[in-house]
Each structure stands twice: as C-alpha cells, then as structure tokens.
Image 1: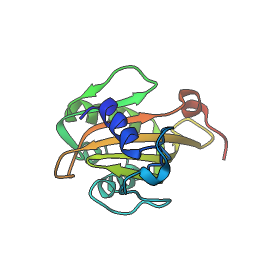
Image 2: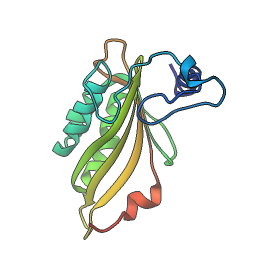
Image 3: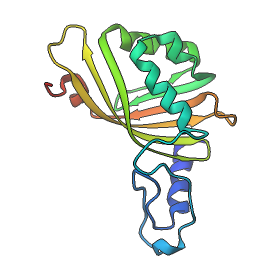
Image 4: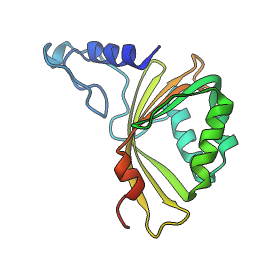
Length: 173
C-alpha cells in the first residue's frame, strides 16, 4: 500500500471526525457518522503496529546501524523529506543510517503521539541529538510514517517529514 492511498483511506474513514492523536480530519460528514477506529490517544499504547515503532525508536540511542536495519524488510524503502531520493533495500538503508549515526554524539527519538490504521503507523516525535562537532543539542519535531509487513514484524516503508533548517541548527538547550 503506498502512502498516498493510505492517506486517502484514512481521510475517507474519518468521515469528518478526528482520526487519532494527530487529528487527521475532513470537512463534510458529521462527527457522529465516523466509525470507531483504533487510536492511541495521547500516549503510545503497544499494539500490532505501534509496538514495533516504539522498539525501533528506543533502539536509536544505541547508535547501531545494523541493529536499526534489522527492523526493515529486505526490499523496504526509506525517505527523509525534504531531502531528495528514496533509499531502497535493507543494505542501502543500513548504509544510510550508518552515515547519519557517524556524525552524532548521541540521539533519542521520543514519540509524542501515534495512531495506527491497518499496517500503517503515523507517529509524531521529538528527535533529540547532538552532532559530533556541535556545542548544542537539536530537538527536532518529526512526523514519521511507517508501513509494516502483514505480520507487523518489519517495516516495508519509512518516511520522515521534518524542517531541514531546524535539523541542522536546532535550538540551544
């Protein structure tokens, strides 16, 4: 399932009501017409999709690209928007993650809110990190979209959306 069809399906399913913690909504149908959908509210609750995302985010503090790449299916894709390009395949993803990790002193990925629908999890996070030659931390708000295998054991797609300027400079803490 690609992200565009997932997003359209989430909006149609919402029927005008808020969908989960991040408030996907459409105008039109009254809120009372919205079906009951699984959501996590203000906290991440372990579930078929959210549990894997939670484990993946926790492992980032180890700064181990091989450990992170193990979360991905062999033919998975990874994209950081607004950066160009899509990285395809577990080995290529591991290499890209190793390049990111190489320039970090430390990092933590803190999930703020998450919602899951079928095999897709959308999570808002604050990623906190420090570059190796920096004198301050960066706290970067991110929205991550994860698509999972049918058995919910690996990612088939991961797309992060963030502000590139804020990711480079952040705010001093």
